[in-house]
Amino acid sequence: MPEAPKVPIAASATHDYVIDHNRPDVNQNALEFIEDVTTNADEIQKRVLAEILSRSAHVEYLQRHGLNGRTDRETFKKVMPVVTYEDLQSDINRIANGDTSPILCGLPISEFLTRYIYISSSGTSAGERKLMPTIEEELERRSLLYSLLMPVMDQFVPGLDKGKGMYFLFIKSEAKTPGGLVARPVLTSYYKSLHFKHRPYDPYTNYTSPNETILCPDSYQSMYSQLLCGLCQNKQVLRVGAVFASGFIRAIRFLEKHWSLLCNDIRTGAINPQITDPSVRDAVLRILKPDPELADFIESECTREAWQGIITRLWPNTKYIDVIVTGTMSQYIPTLDYYSNGLPLVCTMYASSECYFGLNLNPLCKPNEVSYTLIPTMAYFEFLPVHRNNGFTTSISVPKSLNEKEQQDLVDLVDVKLGQEYELVVTTYAGLYRYRVGDVLRVAGFKNKAPQFNFVCRKNVVLSIDSDKTDEVELQAAVKDAINHLVPFDASLIEYTSYADTTTIPGHYVLYWELRHDSTTPIPPSVFEDCCLTIEESLNSVYRQGRVSDKSIGPLEIKIVETGTFDKLMDYAISRGASINQYKTPRCVKFAPIVELLNSRVLSNYFSPKCPKWVPGHKQWCTQKQN
Ligand code: AMP
Image: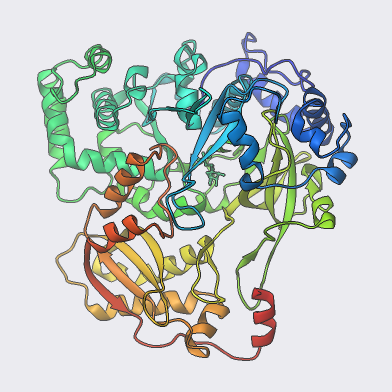
């Protein structure tokens, strides 16, 4: 994600740890900041918590739980519960409905940041959006994290100040709560802020997209104009990116569909009349000049049969792709490699609507080695140990609600253990206390005293028919194994999702696959059947037991869907309030209209031809564990 403005962090308990942006060696200064805060991680965490609690000593939520103005970690851990969004829902609703008394935070809630949830746990459309309270000064914390990214990157790829970044960034229209607070995604809030819009010129934050194209609420016009500006400055582009890999691939797909219109604009120096937003037109016209030679070049590249390496062909000076490919995004790595001829994929930061967490200090590492160093000034972090039921199943087991002892057992930032997995729990300046973010992280190492985490997954069971519980990581690994069968046919998986179909008896897992199939050699049905079986073989023993012994799960099914189906799914999500920047293809769908949409585009379907292997012997243990 592109970094931006350079502002010191708000005066606070962490005020010793500031970046002086007036220093000429600002990059060095940022690196020193990272050294300082990671060396003094525990001391800073203590101060951050004390500061949050003393500022909010009078708020209703802390009083309700009997904190009584205490600001020490011990009392905090003893009296404050570890919570999820549902626990805060009624307090958040009061704020949304206009109650301005200090309910969660001592400082005024400036807006809500929305997190789009594809389906609620009940599978209905209710509760699709979560509202995260935020305060004005959080913008400064976010800006601080952004301002660390380029100094880190510059150590590995020097000279990025000599050209531009082509980033596809989008905003979403915003809503108002009944009480009048704005509710919008965190990136929309950020891009609309003065911090972003009025960022001083900085050679490291020079983008091909003018602000007007990013701030255009119409996603077609925004994408079109950003691509147009990126294409007409193609030689200057040194890095490309979007927030998540899926967003970047969407831009490439858009180019596949619209390159001839874009070439026409470049050839004539005039903009396609579909772009009607006057500020976008003006901004683009400041950049666009008739360039028939460039138009011919783009046309000849785009009309080549294969799009392999299209990024390096059209933007020949690109040094890396800046997109998140950790977590569920890892399945886009082959597609990005294909389009870029294997350019480095750089994951720079880890953040959420609740709080921005940290950054990758070794950005050129391989995607599967990415780890994020949490910056101790951002919030107070705690970690709930997570156990994998190794040996019998790889399911992640995280308790839904915690008893008193478990609440006290959360580990502090500097006390996490190498190799152990934890669920992240945050206490923020904006009024979340011991809030379970829902992400599972693994300790990969340490930068001074601060741990560095691999992102493992969002803690959720995506598929379940019976006592089986398949999470995102297992599904991803199983699909990865299966798609090896497609390699001899020059086919690859573009996107997938899954569905636990319980309308059949017994119920069964359905995977929807969208393929890219460049060659004319047809793929025989037996290959897809092998894919089904490979997935089943990779799934955990409780699943296989259900299939083989209990017969409680039917054969796994793969449904091949038409090209463009997942774009339709994204359009649908966007029309219902998802933000393009933050959109992640759901790895499991439950919401009936989405299942219908997928089913309406099925080209063919295949079932696992036989049962996967399963060795009895640990049934009782497994059953107990699963229950
Ligand atoms: P949102 O609040 O919609 O911005 O989503 C935040 C969530 O996106 C996080 O809690 C993670 O689950 C996911 N996420 C954010 N950054 C990363 C990252 N670098 N790698 C993997 N997942 C991420």
